Image (cartoon, rainbow, N blue to C red; front, side, top):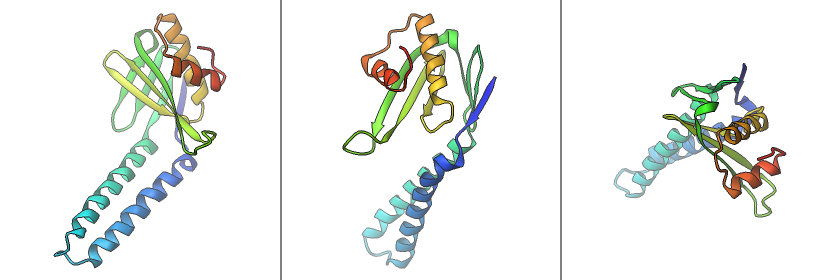
Length: 158
């Protein structure tokens, strides 16, 4: 069994963006007059940045356990998928620049009644993708072209 979690270094900029956005919007909110309609915009933005920060906290508390039988995700919401029950596998790349050289990947696994989503900032991500690809092959699941291309890009045979 392997237990993995997102390192703080991978979440640092998410925390920084969330907290900075929340503080800036809150300061603008409290220094603004309530008669101004613009104040409601900053109420909404403050709430959105707070939600973003809380999702980062949830990701920070999440633990993944990978075994020969399946994968388990523990945190606020516990999910588990047995490899034999894997029903869908999707690997997507999200570029952060026009050159498409920088970005991150997101692996989505569905099986039984569970769904687990993992980002490429998790240590051991490519090993999880390889294990999921093996399970998909064993279960005779069709893998879409985008997922197959993304697997090949990280060196995982689809």
